[in-house]
Amino acid sequence: MTTAEADDLWPDVRPDAARRLMAAAVESFAERGYHATTTRDIATAAGMSPAALYVHFPAKSAVLFAISRSGHQRMLTMVERVVAADPDPVATMRSFVEMFVAWHANRHVVARVVQHELGALPPDEYEVVADLRRRTEQLVRDVITRGVEAGAFAVPDVRTAARAVLGLGIDVSRWYQDSARQTPTELGHQYADLVLRMLGHRP
Image (cartoon, rainbow, N blue to C red):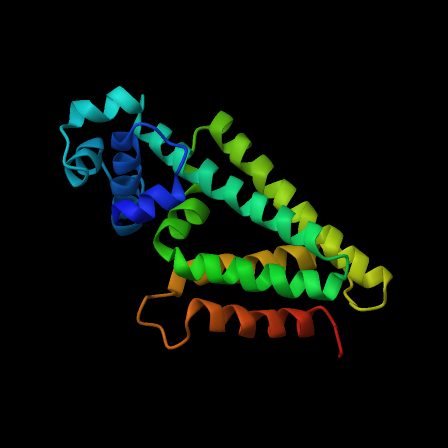
C-alpha cells in the first residue's frame, strides 16, 4: 500500500507513523491473516522497530480496530450520502450498489481486512464496529422498504434482501484482483443491474 493510499484511507490519523503502521498491518493481515501476524511483522513492514508500534497502538488488536472502525465508518458515511441524494428508491439502490461494489474492488486488500477479520476484535471493539454495520444495513433496508411500498421492488423479506445486497458487495473484496477483466466501475454497473433484478424491479 502506497503512502498516497494510506493518506486517502486515513486522512485524519496522526502522526504519519501511525498511518504507516496501519498500512503495513493491512498488508500483513490480508496476506497472513490476523492471528498469524505478529507485531514484529507489522513494525518491520512499516520500517520501524517492534517497540515503535506500542507508541501508537497499545496492542495488535488496536491496530485492527482502527482499520476496521475507519473502514466501516467510511462505508456508513458514503451510504448516508447516497440515500440523501435521491428520494427515488430505484435510483438510490443503483447508486449505492455501484458505489459499494466499486469501493470493495478498488480497495480489495483493505476491504478484506475490514470485512473479514471482525471475529478477531475484542468484544467491546467488536460491538463498536457491529453498530456501524447495523446502521449501514438499516439504511439499505429503508431503501428497499421504500421501493416495496412504491411498488418498485417485490421481496418476501426486507431484512434478508438487505443482507443479500450487502453480502454481494462485500464478497467482491474476497476475489477481486487488480488484473480482473472488469474495472471496479464496470463491475459496479453489472452488480447494480443484478441487484435490481434480484429485488424484483422490472423497468
